[in-house]
Length: 226
Length: 246
Ligand SMILES: Nc1nc2c(ncn2[C@@H]2O[C@H](COP(=O)(O)OP(=O)(O)OP(=O)(O)O)[C@@H](O)[C@H]2O)c(=O)[nH]1
Ligand SMILES: [Mg+2]
Image (cartoon, rainbow over all chains, first blue to last red; front, side, top):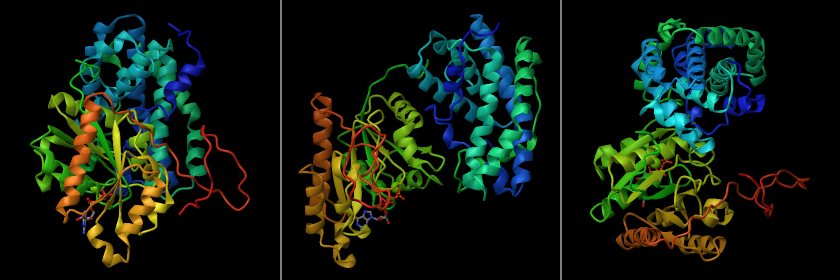
């Protein structure tokens, strides 16, 4: 099921400037910095790698699966996908944010590139699910989709790094460059998993990130919503 | 139900301006004065905290659930101009949850002089300066000062304390706006508060009868890039370069 869609559509979807409100989030970096767990560049690299291998892979696999199902017109599979994704996000705060970002992405994409599948997604679909449906509507493949969401996972946190840490932006992008082959590998893994049943999609966890998100919600002063 | 479900659309009124000039206070005043006349909702944009929402809720000017905060990730100007999705959804949710609303007020996070609302988000906007920021600010121009639907010069009661000649500042603002409305305001002067309310009634009236045309104040203030400035701008319009950034 390779999408015939071109690379340009993929770039459109993975560009942080897509107006869907992602800039309000640090991908868990701000809470990690506040808690003193990320203080320098090597911490940041470990944080980003850990995030890609856990939350990144889950989001990639679920978006690839949503893309796959949307391409086949099997939207009846979406509720099961949503339930499986809920089960992989212990923090109620992170589940809420994922659905909030999903609504925002659908709001934006419904205006940018309308498609009937958006209406079938329920009141507040998870962001990776909406991403997958958007990718299918642009005729992209599940692997493309996985790559886009892995890229976005890194880009959001990297952009936030400049605001919550003392960083040299070149060093931050050097980390991203070192991670490029990892992202390719994870995208392949996610796309393979997307061919199988929803219940078998990857489920790696990072419990401390979930706990940190709950604390962050209660913080009096914060730059980022998560 | 999806987000595209249409519900009663309210007049969306933006309140922008630099930090601390009195945006929240202006919104509180409008709510207090007009809540029996119009069904109102408020969306605030916050930078670090939900201070604006807390302030408005504690002022008790509206039921708490009609005041909602959008968190902007330290990008208040992005949230009201480049990527308005979060605000648009907050406004649409509010319009749906409390239908029918007459006016939704959107407070921008306090930002610099160049931050104005996108016409995709609001139908009209007022820009708030205060006398305490200095009498010369009105002369600096910029899109909000020059072309917002209304320019408010707030805290005029403080004029004598900060050595600002309020009449002079208003005259400068009127010159910068080529006659577009300027309102000198102080919450301690009831006649100025009445004038603010009249303006809101008038803009709601012309919006409701279809005669109001939303205008876009524009994205950038006239600016200058250095001593050898001979560049042209890539953002689609030409403008004079005589104001240094400050
Ligand atoms: N003297 C005087 N003070 C005022 C007036 N209006 C507002 N203030 C004061 O100005 C300060 C800032 O007012 P806010 O309404 O919070 O200003 P703001 O623009 O919402 O501030 P940010 O949201 O932080 O950018 C507060 O201490 C207000 O009490 C006025 O008419 N006269
Ligand atoms: Mg305020």
